[in-house]
Image (cartoon, rainbow, N blue to C red; front, side):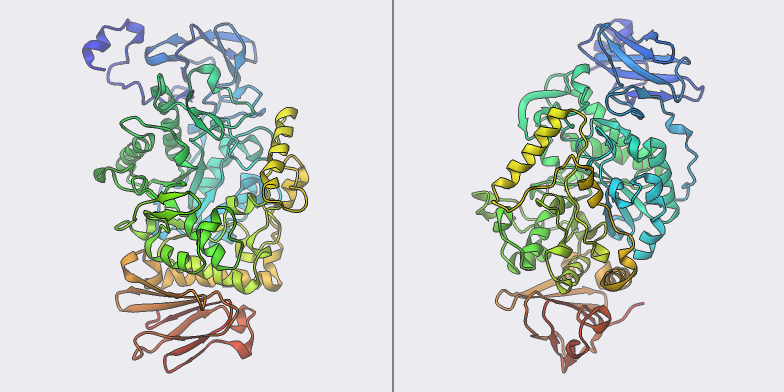
Length: 630
C-alpha cells in the first residue's frame, strides 16, 4: 500500500508514522512506563472490549488499520486475569495469550516478558555444525515433569556431551498431559510445565551450562480443544484440506493477519525467550502458494534479528519432502531454512538393523538405502518410490552436512508404534551400539531421543488429557482404528490414561548400573570422539566415501579431514566379517569397537587387525584412524 492510499484512509485506520502494520506483536505487552500495550486482530468484528476479571471492568479497544484493535492502558498489570469481549458477545481468552494459568478454557493472565533478569549476555549460539542434539519431552523427562525439574538434569547432559537440547512443543494444550502437538495458544507456555517464566529460567540455565536450546513449534495446525482463533477472525480456510481439518489461512483472503500472528510468534521466541533454534513441525502441511512463502518471510525476519543481535538463530524443519527448495538460501530461490530432519536415514537404518519393512519402511532396502543416505542424504532423490507410486525427491548435491539432522529413533518413530516400544526392546544390545555409532559418525547433525543413551526400557507412548469427554473417546477410537489395519495383537494403550503417561517417563536410576551404565559410557565415548577427531567433527560431505555389500550386510565408510583419515565398519550381519582397510602403509589406530569387552563384548571376540585385514564381529561398529587427535 503506497503512502497516497494510506492518506485516503480515515485517521484511525492509518498506520502510525514510521511503523509498518505487521511489526507489532499481538497480545499484551508492557512498555517502559508499566503500561499495557494491547493488539488484537479481529477484522470482521465491530467492537472489542478488554475485560478485567478482578472488577469486571470493560475497557474498549480502538479499531485501527487492517483489522487490528489496539489499546494502551495502565489499568492492566502483570498477574491480572483478563479476557476480550467481541461484539458484546461471549468473553474469550486472548488469542496471543502468554499465560493460561487456568488452562485452555480459563481466562488469560497478563505476563511481563521483560520481567525476567537474564544472565546470558555473553552467550553465543554455536555454529550449527557443532550441534549434537538431545530431544526431550518436558512432561516425561523427569518424574515431576516441569521446566524446573529439567534444570536439575542439565549437568548430566553436559557430562553426556550433547551441545543442544530440543524441547518438544510447550504451547498451551488441554490438561496436563500431551505430546505438545495439540497446542491451541501458540504464544502461551504450558501452565503445568511452569509457564513462561519457567521456560525463560530453563533457557537461561541452559546457556549458563553451555547448552543451546531448540524449541519444537507447530505452525501447520492447532489442536482441537480450546481452539478459539476462528472466533476472532479468518485464521482458517477451507481452500485446502489437511489431516486436522481446514488449513491455517496463509494465502487466502485476510491471510496477512494470520501470517503476522505466526511470524511474530517465531520472533518472540527468539527475542524474548532467547531460544536458539526452532524445529518447525511438518512444514509440508503449511499450505501457502503465495508469492513469498511463509517460511521465507520468517527466515527473512530472522536474518534481520541476527544482524541486530550478532547472534545466530536457526530454523530447522521437519518435512515429508525431499525438496532442497526449503533449505536452499534465498539468493538461490530457496526458503532459507538452516536444516531439516531426514526421516529416510532413520528408515534405512531401521531396516538395516533387521526390523520390519512394512508400511513406508517397505520403500527401503537394507544396507543399500543406508549407504545411499550416507552418500546422498536423500534416499529418494528423483527415483521411483514404490510406496508412493511415483518418482520422488530431488538431489541434495552441494548442500553441506550440517543441513541434515539424523537419528536412530525419535518421539514419532517410537510413539507412533502401538505399544511405544523403544529401540532397546526391538533389537539386541549389540545392535543398539551399532545404530548409535551409525548416527554419530555420519557427516550430518546427530540427534538422540531422551534415554536412548542408557538403553531406556520404558516406552514412549501416545498420551493426551482432553477434558471434553466426546473428544477423549474420539481419540481412543481413532487410535484403535489406526492399528487395526496392521492386524496387531492386543489393544493400544489408552491415550487418556494417566498410567500411559506415567509409563512413558524416564527411569533415571537405570544409567547408574549394569548394561545401562555400559551403554551410557559408550555414548559418552562416541560423542567425545565426534568432537575430538577432525574427520568426524566436520560436516564436509565431499570428504566421505561409502562402500557396501548387501550380501555381507556390511558398510564401510571413509572420512577425511586434512591429514586424518578414519574408517568406519558397520557389520549388520550375524557373522564375523573380514575387511581390508584402505592404504595399507598407514599405521591404523583403533578409536573404538563396540565388540570390545569394556562395552560388554567378549574378550575372545575382540576385533583383530593383521596386515591391514580386520576381523569384525557380528552386529558391530568399529572405528579406526591413521592419526589420533585428543
